[in-house]
Image (cartoon, rainbow, N blue to C red; front, top):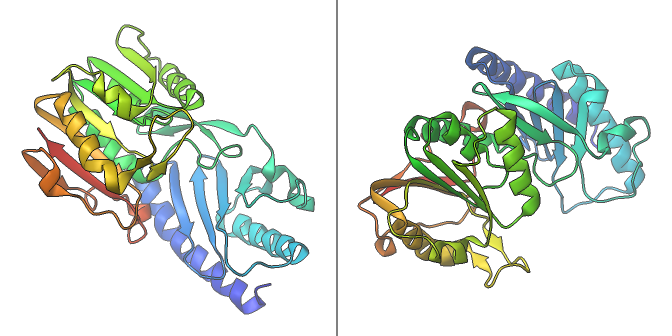
Length: 316
């Protein structure tokens, strides 16, 4: 277990980053943001705020503590975090490695299932789930990218590939898109995406379509020039049973982007993003008139220096 000195370092670090980030969030009217991400090696945690709730994820580490020792350590961490962030313990939800349920004594309800909340971002509403999935349903690091899509969507036909819970689709619809198609291999996420659309009172079944499909195959079915703006944020690797072929983003990105480009009208745009840390864009192989690396430009204040994803804007 970490020594009192280590806990004191954690307290100081958390106090400092929270003061800085909370101030910026308030100034920008942002209620969902990342506070801490493994800043200190002994405290391998990620802390995010979603409105009035805290989401805590613990990273797996090479050196495991014994179970009882780990529980005591985690309780001490939660206590310290709640104190520094002035958050009631009941509003903390934690994702940790799979262990026996309910081991956390006093903090048992943090691993409760069904922790669904509606949060606001840029005047739009989104459902987040802080308990049941690996991710919460809203990728905070794409806040700026979503804003860009909203501004550019007016009267555009928008395609959101690997749409997850459809936050980009909601932004596009709010930006006045003439059509929004959201494609994903998960029925759960497509349903969630439709729920997000309905939450904002902008759902129109004539304009908004949710397609359950494998993106690789789906792209082959699209007519040329059928979209003006495409968002593509694929997984790094996927070998779902429902896919014909597995997806490896380093290997497949040029082919995926070229197929997508065929479905884009002249002058159209693709926003492409990947979380693969060693990613290298194969510019030579991509049929694009211009490619711009917008990673820096789309990095929010709460991810500065800690963002491990790439983002590109490609023009037809």
